[in-house]
Image: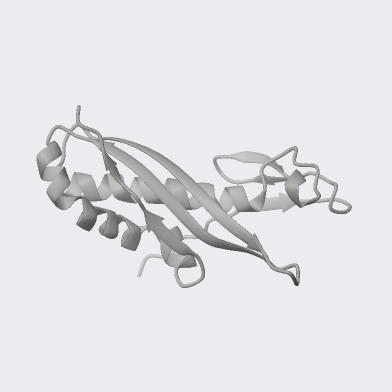
Length: 147
């Protein structure tokens, strides 16, 4: 079994109206509570970062599935939407993440026959999907773009 550590350093001072920061090997950014939830909203928030992680993981997994299936000249555009709820007791929860991939390739007819299986393979091979599965519903609604 291969193991790998993903390291993130996060810093925060004071209360809800503050802005913190995070740093990884390849990115760094600012974090805050969204203005809709009473924060300053001047930076990314953990919920956006969760959706961004799910989206980036899924698009890479889908690209790999298409490559293994020998599709060529592939282009994928992915829009992802995270839908969260706030219960009466104040618990905030991500309910669903819906991916809307638009895929184009040289062989549209072949893709139309295989897209459902390929989106399933991509979801099953995405580490973020696997980490949140059972807690957040992942929905994929693909579109095939003919060139």
